[in-house]
Image (cartoon, rainbow, N blue to C red; front, side, top):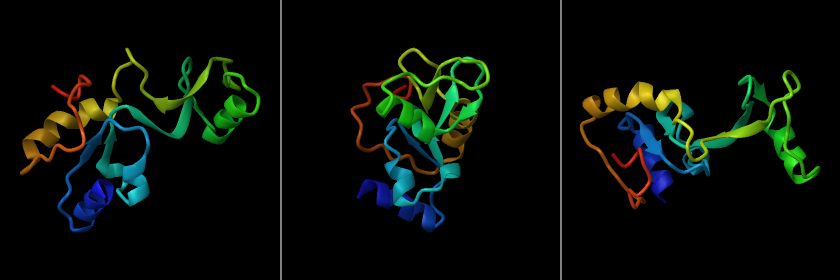
Length: 124
């Protein structure tokens, strides 16, 4: 229901942005536009090489992991490919850093829901 509520806010033109730490993509599935989303810990819609950063097929990435039981590798540089999720110790996406301060100043209301606020740096 909360994801649908966020989508409704967007539909009514009342949503500046939604920041989520979830990687489940439920906001997008509920109808929130990806341009309104900051997926702080990434998502499983896309994949990229950890060495050269080239995009890779998420379908092929999943196939290699599930069916072949091996880590996917980049067809260009042979580095490892992973879904575009943020692992512990990795920096948050550049889009987060680009928009968080601007959005905080521009927002009329901040709604915080469904979190223990225990995971940094989003809890700061």
